[in-house]
Amino acid sequence: MALTGLLIDSHDCNHFIAVLPYTWKPMALDAPLAFERKEGKLPGTRILTLNGPLTLRNLFELQAEFRTDPQPKLSILDLSGVPYMDSAGMGLIINHYVHCQNAGTKMIAAGVSPRVHELFKMTKVDSIIPQTATVEAAEASS
Image 1 (tube, rainbow, N blue to C red):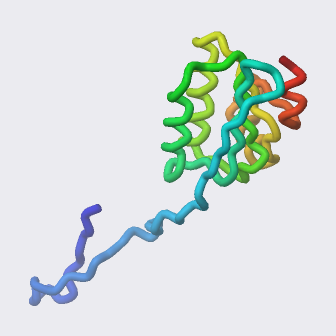
Image 2: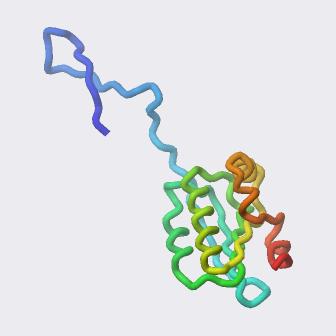
Image 3: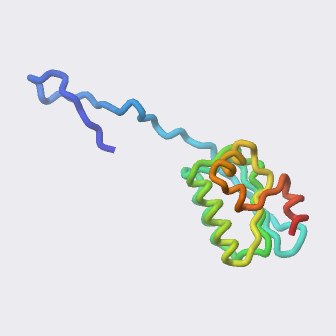
């Protein structure tokens, strides 16, 4: 980011003050995102349990995980440990949903926190991605 300067004294052009816009703040460091992959009770079921915020700063490992193996018959994202997500995190979830649809896989978001559910409602994602209260309910719905 280039900084602009202001002259302190119109006669002394070698002295500049760095001026940052009033909206500038350093990007807060998010807590790390951890995830665990496990097999479900039924064959062909994969459960990814996420813990931590899902943001641009920490989603790349999860993105790589989504791309690794062939898609199972049922992909459950346990979001009960995700307190919030930004637009990049939402985009990753939607991208995974579309990828699952194209592969003939059913994807369900389980345990969505109230804050993330509000984001889903505001963006109308709640009308597209199936959701259940728990992982057990997601497994039972298949």
